[in-house]
Image (cartoon, rainbow, N blue to C red; front, side, top):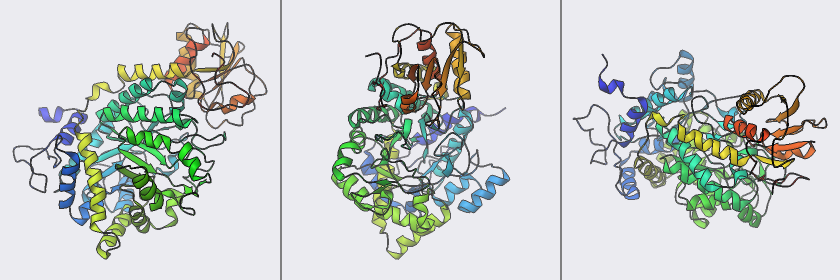
Length: 565
């Protein structure tokens, strides 16, 4: 029969590893009374002072490792397929994720996945998230590997859980509506509650960093690449929403990461494939792009992500992620940000103009603290270590970044972490439903009563999952759902910005950004999200069981923010 320790849920093991502490903050041996490795970081102590003390004792190799946050192949810490092992050896010279952690004294690791409808998935070379239980076991194993090293430092383990299009863990987790839906709801209390519930789920499975929320302010062009990942186009309103999401996540013990500094919302070029240009003046940047980042700073955000963006008004010709004028002169000095700066993925095209080692060195010299997803971990690590040994990067520069990183780890470890019972639980589902219901917007059509009467036929190319969810919700709401005839409810999903809507349906619903509704006929509705919660809320509005209280957070040509003022 397995021992009680072996019967612990993986998330509880991860919790014990993260919060275990001993009085020695150096490299002393773990407490011999415990069979589990213990952390050298003591929650409750002054984070900045303890972080500086610990960072000052680290070797060059350990300091370099703290600044790296790569991915790894495989769904378990110590046992992976032969293909994953070969890919890990090619990427990092070690076979398993746990071996990679130990070899490089890593400070963090990112869990990734790839799906066809995710616009950011091109840089994800593997998928190592399957289910909450699998992720919990993986993160526990990774933490155990890190805490077993001489420095005994916990990992930052992150993922991109923005909700909406960019969501790495979908199955078995509550799915919030996309950010733009919360912008339409316009209620920061709802936003904070939803992101706190989501953060609790992430924390329960061993994640302590979320590369969210998106702090980009959308421009006026419907073709922008950020879309529903943003809370909207009004800097002041976006700022309120971003701050609420940051507070919610971090109240649950998960570091929020606002992105993409200094602002990706006014671009039509995707920084995954080429370098977008920000042509606006410094005054326009300050008024239109920076406010959400300042709001996040004031909310105590754990990380800010530097964007691969050519900022013409500050340092033209190269990515902001490699610019000390952007990251040090602007973000650190002028804006007063003292937290962790993390690069956007270094395997994106704008960062790959240099080799992995040189890019790593340049990114640190520019002012970044954490290097996310270097395209070759072995080369990035060697490049940094060689730069320290040659004097190109001072050891003190590494200590500065490591101190910020360790201080963040201390703050996170001080927050009690929930057990697995919160995952896909009532609190998260309730928060998702509330946010989705508050977002539904009628841009043209009736504001009272049902939007259609009689049988309903749901259509929509490319929206199969949403269509099935809506049909199910309509039946539960008492509607008759048919496959022929009836009143057509057409769903316009992602990538349908140029859809031909000249043949009007009774109701046309925008599941992503609502710009496409400008050319549509009939009753027009926006949900801004295709989550199950959003489809349930939409069914209630269609059948007249609920009103549509939302207001579109972006301007749609020829249409009001809501028809139901």
